[in-house]
Image (cartoon, rainbow, N blue to C red; front, side, top):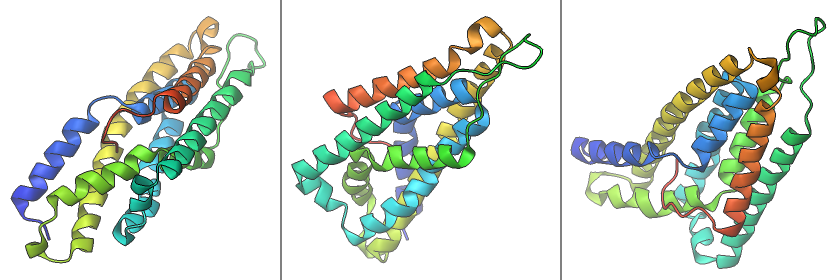
Length: 218
């Protein structure tokens, strides 16, 4: 088990970095504005806790090091993530918001919570940066004199995912409130999904062209 001082230092470092907006936060904001708070929170669940169920065991097994040692593997994963984001964005741009029978208002199209969780998880897993973060950052806080290294990695990894969930959930709630306010205005609501789609396409192109320049991600 890590010492209290080491654990607090880790939490402070992770939260300080996660507060800076990055691709995950932008994706959550787009979801919140375009599909509402519940869908945005589902995306957060997928990109943090569900993705962590895959990332943490692989980290403990050392498989994630293959990404760092293989430039081709890194590039392939980056391209896959970029293509997926662009594909999602194009789908959203193609959606047409249905009108209510009264003709007085429009409502955003329904979107599956399961699909939002799945897509959030895929987007996070297909971005090489979270994998490299775990490999490069988490071991810096390991103290071999404090017990099993694997147990310490899991503690730090779970903490990282939980803090990421909390911070991204705040983004989701705020964006959902904005989306709810916009839905009161028929002239604006039709642009909600286009906004979300444009963000996804932009993130995909950014990942494809320049990659994520940040070295840490939730």
